[in-house]
Length: 424
Image 1 (tube, rainbow, N blue to C red):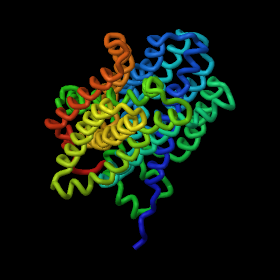
Image 2: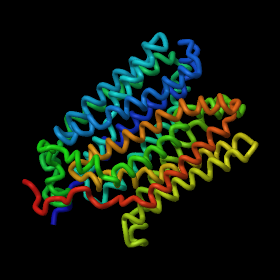
Image 3: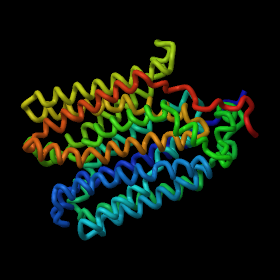
Image 4: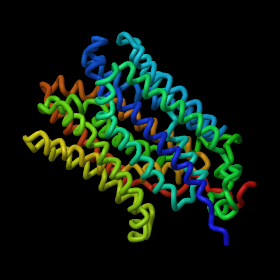
């Protein structure tokens, strides 16, 4: 018997490279915020809005882009998304005051919205059930590690060119990706000429590849308590995680750590988060066998992730020495990402043919949590007399609430039964 080809893994490869580009473009502003504030004469409050506006517009456009991916296919939508956000990444370097950079970052967020929901849609149509959560683990490992090493990359690039030219260079990466992806990808994997019959037999049933031109089941999705519980826990997760992608450099500076060591410590939470995603993506199958239930396995991983992050954040405040304390914050990134593959896996399973829409709703609510964090952190600092521990305690409490959500969440049962017969 002819062994199956492995063309489907090309989807994972494109998703991984896209995740890397996504997080390079996102995290670049975190490392360059000092130079931006100085050149554009921004206050801390204005910089907080610059950091958070991305999350707000990203979340606002998640559902439209996810719905369009379900309706007309991920191929056309991802092309538009990547070209759009790449342009506004470059345009960040052309800004001259608060209004211009706020507008540009808002458009950057709107352009990047829908990236991961459409990648999730691609996984749902291209990968067998047994490979999808593992693929999410690899995806988020790549995204987090891109974010982890970006501070050092930006530091290196900015010693050679200005921060504005740095954004232009990073913006060009997405255009290259979009060109090759559009040439290779097919919305229906059975249309790809590289697959042999053995691999075609491994693919998900054909109805998952059918665009939902007949309409997304909005009423079923929007009135589902499980969709909103899934989204609520993602709000908690994103609120806690956005500390690592916004004010962490400022916090590290307040502990007296500077230079290359500071850049390494800025990237530590995302480095460990990538390990957490990879570990979780591979351990879930074993946990499912041990517990006898994929739902129990996902619930256990997510609860341990949320609770572990909460505890590690509190412990970090108890250590006076800055480097060990910041290492604990890095380890909190590991436990944070024990929640990522279960969350995105649940969005795929609940959504089925509407996985793009369901994952977009989850990510939209998560973006609200991310957007809320930088502004909330500034207010907490003002009210507490610049006490960073107060910011961290609030994040720890939010993580704990996320763990409670998973006690009541069924993360595997589809919202609508799949047709018994596959569509041609």
